[in-house]
Amino acid sequence: MHYAASYVPLVQEEAQVLRWDPNSRRKPTSVTVGSAFALKALLEPGDHLWLMMGSTNVIAALSAFRKGVEVHQLSFPRVQSWLSSNGRQTEEEDTEEEQVGRRTKVHPSQVLRAAQETPHLFYSLSGQQNEVLEIMGAWDEVRVAMRERLSSSNTLRASIHYQANVYGRVRGKQLPADPDEAQEQLSWILYDLLDTRERDEQGKLTGRKRAPSDPHIALLAEDEERKRSDLERICSRSAFYQHLFGDVEGVGSMIGARVIAAVERIERFARPEDLSNYAGMLPRGKEGHMPARKSSKGQMLSRSPKLNTTCFLLQDHMFQWGRNSELGQRLIGQVERNCPCTAEQRQKDKDLRRKHAQAVKQARIAMTRYFLEKIVWPRWRSYMGMR
Image 1 (cartoon, one colour):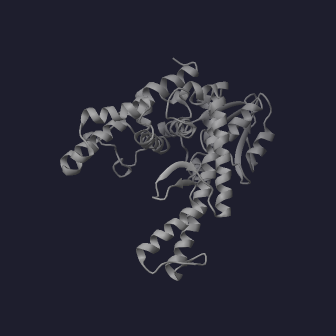
Image 2 (tube, one colour; image 1 turned 90 degrees about the vertical axis):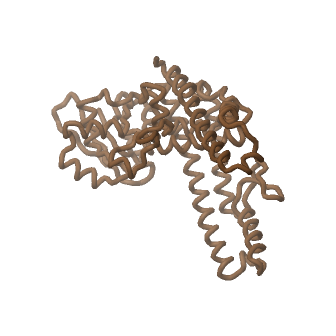
Image 3 (cartoon, rainbow, N blue to C red; image 1 turned 120 degrees about the vertical axis):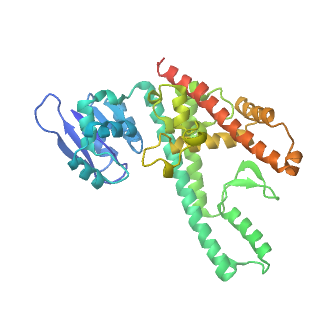
């Protein structure tokens, strides 16, 4: 049997899956599933599952593949381009898409039609890609845990600020009347309750971890740290991850997994420059500037916000903590060549500060392009057996 899915929920939430037999003349039937477990129960070894990439579908694809199901994945840009060409999207499907909502964007009936008419648009899941999905799933666990901790911390922080401003007290402790002293004391109270990073007496980060004193935040931080350890263990045991980043100093499991999750399929990028373009590292538009959504005139931008954000995290890390690594030296070396000056000289010269800032920006982009085009793209493709 063949199954077509757009969005597969992890928790109890209804989603439609279409089932059909290509050797039968019967029309496809709709099956309602309430979770990835329900979909997995429907599938048998040798079945075919056609579904969209990304979101919780990563977990559904991984579990189906391990059950012996042949999994085929379709990217959103590919199906959108296919639907828009020659007016393939019908009025009925337009209505269905609105009912599905913005999160899924593509209806199962559209996935089914693509599977029947243009199966070459899909990427088949292989053993190597299975490793990719495993890392993506582990990273998603970390991402969700981190989001829950930050959300709870922000809620508690807002409550503390309310108590401090309205009553002048925080958890039974009276704040000083002087606003500067009150603000400083409040900052240390929030640090004690919420922060997972240790600071010295001057407030500088030491690089060590600490347990927040608020019990709820401490539990969330412990869960997040456990999932970070799981991700690190999976990456350390993955031949794919080690082939990609094993000898790249300064790129740990957190940044590496983010890159893998944002790219997902290296087959999508025929040239190394295409990957840099997807990351938003190639200037486009007027005067070499990146186009903004306001100036794109409704056209879909070929830039991944996830990969773009990850690249900026990589740049910040190399500029601050990874200066002695190969990538860090490449970054710092270009800045020093293009704008050789000291911090004292820049402090006295406004034009020199502007020139130095431009040199830093160019060096950050150049380092990122080297990382994507000379490390990620060729190594990933070679591991997948691609030329």
